Length: 194
Image 1 (cartoon, rainbow, N blue to C red):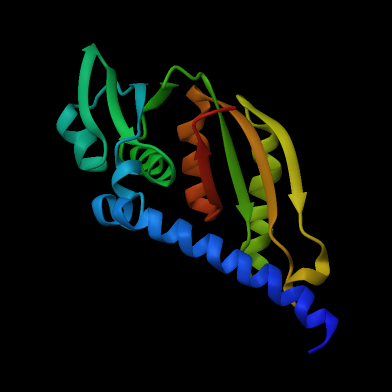
Image 2: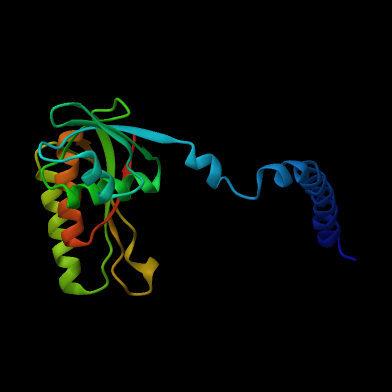
């Protein structure tokens, strides 16, 4: 046995014992709560306040079944809840497409949200359209660029690396931005903060 092996083996055995103890203590919780947090994440929701002048609650629910409890609080003003995280982006995109006249006002009392856009198409023509859409998004009314990032060229085996743009988007401008992203096939993630 060499000194290097002993130096690595002793901490390895100690860590094995510590992690085995933690796994054993977590076992009853895993039995009771399950292996993942999908049920916990389903409990988190965002409240949307939006204008939809010619829409009804049934039309809104038809846009996306995850748009729950859509109710009119005034003529053309609706309040609804949606799941947070990734489903928030999907529901907002579906709402933007299904109800073109809809305009978001607030998301859980936030008037401005952070949106990440990614141009990642491998095909040159489609990528050029995505890049132009990213540049146009920076100039849109209600959109303020926060930062832009592109990975170094050598990280993707000769392929062009994705270009990412983070924007602070005013809620009334969000649905029109999502419509643009859908037509250009930009990858989008809406965050419930700025």
